Length: 293
Length: 148
Image (cartoon, rainbow over all chains, first blue to last red; front, side, top):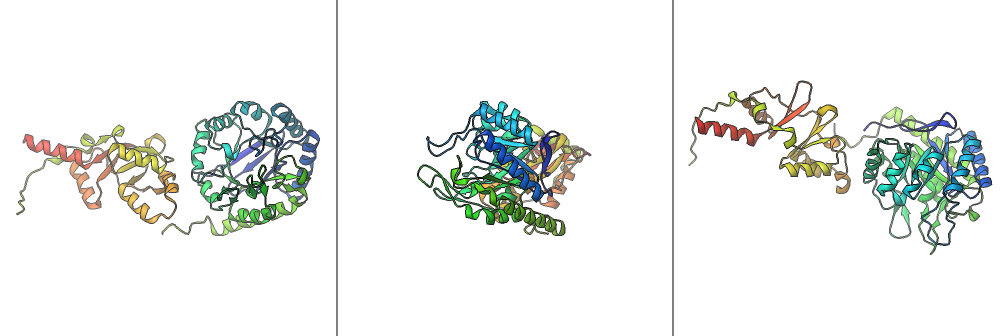
């Protein structure tokens, strides 16, 4: 299949292209929308960092966290309040917005408020969610479930395509390695790229230790930098990281979210490795060491 | 003891188009059909070949039982990944074909020379119109012999 370029945004918030041979794009923000003030602060600070680094970016934050480990964990501000904050922040900072949804009936409202719609990893097989995402006609950010092989993601891709939507970004956020642990199989990227769609690495969820702390998830964020460099070297088109100004007090994913003070350092490295990879791609061409003459 | 006899087979009086299997009786898939879907279709039609078509039924590739045997021996990826591959990835993109107005003898000669059992039948522009399969051809020849 030909390489698809995913186009996110519009004239108001700017247009971002994600795809083969293009600069790496950053997708990030706090895991959950915590408040209007916090969302605005994070959008401004991340925007400043991305400007300095010279990387195009898409803001991501969620209004409903439906897969928390505990019934007592913060569930999110909810559809209306959350989307209103996203609308205001998008309007204020003119940055494309990506958010997810976990109930098919929320698809239309979610699609009206953002530029890219995300399918959560745990729901990546759910036909109703995939259909609802596709019907927004927005680019679909499809996370690979931790339980899915990269090649079987093609079935989820087909469900989106069946609704006439052929703007898809495929993201790896780790695969289950026994219980309460994830591992990153870097062959995910070239395998999922065989669909023709661009691929993305979710660095912060990849270091998660799912529900390892009894009723919450743990995480080994010390591995974020090395995994980012590895993924960028392997070949990705976008990098996803959840970022927070105060991780210990983050209302969601406190053990994995990246402290914003490290964001610039990681983005600089991701960009450098990505640019080197593109240089090597131009010099040596696509990887093809297996095919016989 | 093997007995042989010489018979005159009026094969050149029949064209490939007269005996070919029509499109709806052969496995035909789009390029993005999974290998697994193609194998199912081959089983359904009891044929060891699947024709891979692009827009307007243009024949873009061919996957045969023999290809599948070679793939299983050569491809090192997990079996579940192989089954999820697009069929076109493993297809022969330059298949040997024949035109409908060729004689049966022409077709059988090509098959013998190339050691193949099926020949996709295409128009001048490469559009797939049917499949020349050996058994129906033999049947026509035998029935002709019986009548003469």
